[in-house]
Length: 105
Image (cartoon, one colour):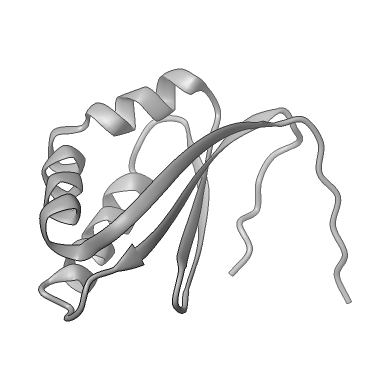
């Protein structure tokens, strides 16, 4: 599903990753993080897709909201599990969305 974001400007966090072999509790943790992030102040929406490379884009009102999510205790614990168990590698990019446009049939 495509996130319904507000009029720009706002921020996007792009998380790109490749996985290790085996699920090892990843799906349960991912579902929990999706629920938890949706409860955070300043969170606007999320989009995610996974094949060989996973890409998750979360949208935020401010850089402060992004920092608060990064520092959230449960998110920090899951992030450490990601480094030790689930990801071969990942990259995080934080961007300011200056404008957007869309198409819909």
